Length: 164
Image (cartoon, rainbow, N blue to C red; front, side, top):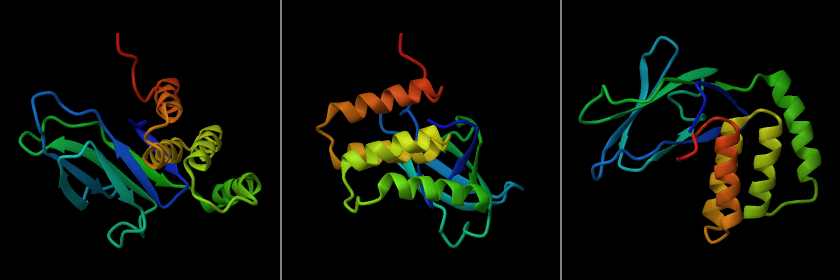
């Protein structure tokens, strides 16, 4: 669930995709530089990947490309996604707004993650919003409101289409 090109404020992002039908599938996640040299290649049976932008293999790159395929058939793959670290000038502006929003809040709660998701969406930082929704759901999986808000976020931003 991600647009083809995104900017990221945080140093990590969660990339998620729909499972393919037909049982358990092993996926290959490749992170590449802009010349498509593979920097990270991992296999997973999960339908998500946590990308650490501080990873030694990619930390010096301001932009990376990510693609997900199946291990058995690399022709079955996602679109290539460009993930860009936020420029310092804009990062300072976002940090100021974030500091204002979160002043006096020190706990990491599902509600705080939910509030952060809205802030990030308002600042067009969709990967950060997506990641915050994921974290809110992980912290409080029993709260349906977070799951519903996440689905609405995906639909609203064209990251997922409504099932008919």
